[in-house]
Length: 152
Image 1: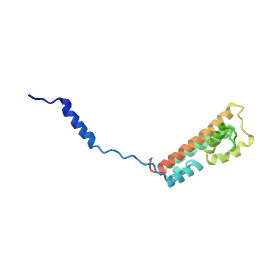
Image 2: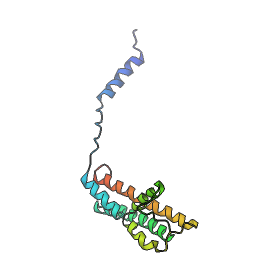
Image 3: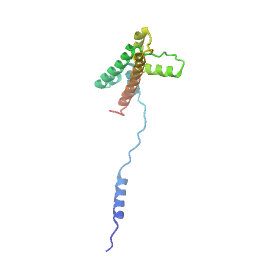
Image 4: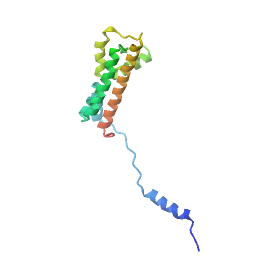
């Protein structure tokens, strides 16, 4: 009897199956003007971009979370960084604060008393404001991705 080894029988069958699968085409990154508009709306008023896209639950969640973090930070008398900061930390803090969108302009109403970073609450307030800005920027990216059709 002339028997064929099992390795010679299995290997051609496996290679035929692998060769038969179509290769996925790489996705080309494209720019979406509609996505950019929605992202700007989402940054300016937290959740507005998601509301335009019909995602009202997500819009409400972002508005409440960003607004809650920002207002809590302002009430704790956190530091709102000025636009023309002299050091890198100040500029980074300004960009984080600016990320809150409309709440950044509301900060001038709350900042009449000035920041209170001499206490732990004032320092925590600064962190709350920066966290609100970062969450809002991430929500703008999320709205852009949804509008561009890359995310559901």
